[in-house]
Image (cartoon, rainbow, N blue to C red):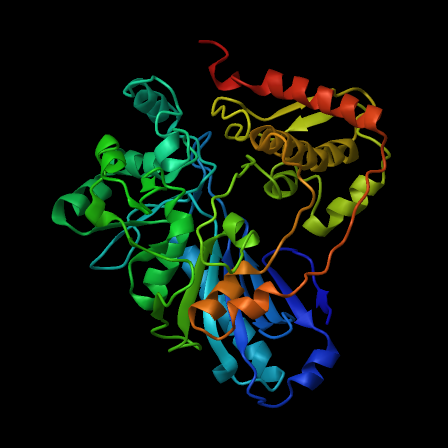
Length: 460
C-alpha cells in the first residue's frame, strides 16, 4: 500500500497514508502495530507499521538543527532531539485517531539512531550538561593524535582487533574525553557522581523511560566496547580515562528496555534498539553478525548545506529538478568533507573542496556535483569492502525497517522465523554510462580527494 510523500520543506515532513489504508483500519481489529523512532542528524521521525504486511500506516518527521559554533565543530541541542521525537509521536497518534485506530493497537516501539553522537547529562536533574557533539564533529583531531602517540604501535589501528575501530574523532570515546577535559559542568558532575553518558539511543530511552541503557550496536561505536566479550572494555576505559560507572548498561538489540512514562503512548514498551546503519542490515537470527562497514563523511546533509549556506535552493525538493536541468557537471567535482574524510581515507584534516570551476559553471553544475559526490563516496566504500572480502563478490544491496521489527521481536509480538521467510521486494538499477566513462569519473574524483586531504594542516 503506497502512501503520499510530502517532501521535506521548512520544518516538517509528513507521510500521509492512502485512502485504502484508511478503510482497512477504520475499526479496531486486533492487529499488531509496531512503531519506530528514527532519530538522525537531519531529522526526527516516528513511524508506525502493520506487523503482518510491513505496510506503513502513518509517520511524521521534523527537521532538527545542527549548530556550528567553531570551524569543524558540529553540535545538536539534546532537548531539541527529544522534543522533536515527542512531537512526532503526538502527530502520529493524532493521525491514527483520524484513521479510526486506537493507540492500544501499538504494542512496541523500536529505536534507530545516529550512533557516535555523544550526550552527557545530570542524573539528578535529567538536564543535558552540554550540547551533543555530533558524529561528524572533528574538534578531537588533536586528541586523537595524542592518543595514537600513547599507543605501543603508534598506529590508529592499535585497538582495532579489540574494538573493530581505528582511533579517530568519529567515535564517541574521544568526544566524551574532550567533554570531561574541557567542560567545567561536566567535570563538576563527574566529581559529584552525577554524570551520565550516552549516545542518542541512550538519551532517548532515559528521557522516555528513565532507564540508562544502550544496545550492542551503539556500544560498538564508542571505542570502549570489546567486540569479543561484548561488554565495556576495562582496558579501553582506562586508556581514555573514562570511568565505567557513567556508561549505560549494555543490552541486546531486541528486548524490553523500559516503558514510556508519560505522553500519548504511556505504558508502551521500547523493545528494540539499533544504530541506524545496523538497523538497515537487520536480520532475525540469534548469532552475532559482525558488520564490515563503510562510513561516509556526508550524505544528504550536503543538500542542506547547499540550501542553508549557499542558498542554491530554497527547499530540498528542488534538488532533483535543478540537477536534471544540466547534462553534466562540466568538469566540476565537489568533495564535501567539511569535517574530514572517513572510509577508506580516515583523514580528519581533509576539508571540503570544489574543483573545476569555469566561466560556464552554474549552481546546477555544483548541485549535480554534490549528488555525484555521494555516489563516489559509496563507490569508494564498496571498493574498500570488496578488498577486505577478497574473492567474495558483492552481489546486491538491501535496506530495511529493522528498528520496528526488532521491537516486535523484543516484545515477542512477531516471530523471527516468520519474518525471515519473507522475500523483500527488489528493484534493480543499471548504470547509464559505460565502463570507460565511469572509470574516468572515478579517477577524477580520487584526484580531487587527494587535493582535499590534509588541507587543515597545509601550512604546517
